Image (cartoon, rainbow, N blue to C red; front, side):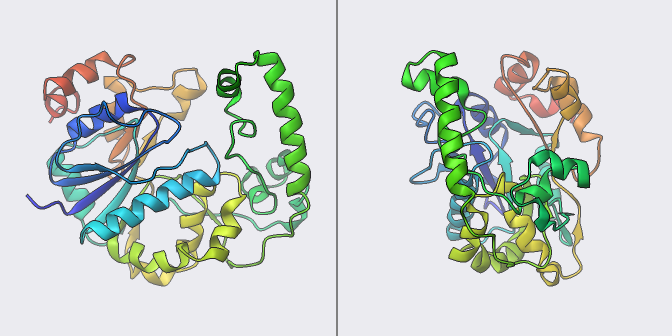
Length: 324
């Protein structure tokens, strides 16, 4: 069975990833970027339709490394075969459609699965606190286009406090002081960078998960490879939520009348706000009812959803969890 769809997976841990691999059959070619900071993948049972990308990079939340990993996946899939569509998903996600319905949705013509939202261009936010963007515009995204961060290091990433303390064997309180000093020093350097050049007429935001047709991605790639485009997004907060979205937003002609269906990924932010970061069986079933464009959901943790893990292990995920 020739694969017509490529599923690109950004993964940090191998345990949930293995369950995703066990669900995606051979009609999906799977390309995996496994965070170089974590396990090397030797323990994975890779099916014939899955492969790890060569030379993975260490990935830090919200940093340029997220885009580096994404671009590695795109290039690997584009070079491997004439897939009709490429879908970027998380290694802790699972499909919420049965295999037949998932393939049909991803092969459907006339639709692009990506979230595109316009971002207000406000140069006066340069050097301001992030809260100023929230107060003025209702969200932080306009701030991102006029300020610089560097989060691709364990001392600098806001989510890496525990990892830094463990890596250097330093008590957390002491490490917080060290990280604070490092972050202030780097912030001072970044503040001296010149403003970003006006490369784009339209600034856009969207969740990082998408499923784009090959013609659209092929047309975007020359711009996505340009050094000046990399420089523009390299020190942006969460460039994975802006780079592809902004490049596509400035090339509406590439859509050719296709419908923008929104992101194919569901994440339950209400549960997350309540302290529950993962979905159970009911959560995955409910996600499928949130719209035809929702094809995947996250986060899946086997220990937190044993019913789901057991169904996948028994080869009954579609029948027992999705009700197919």
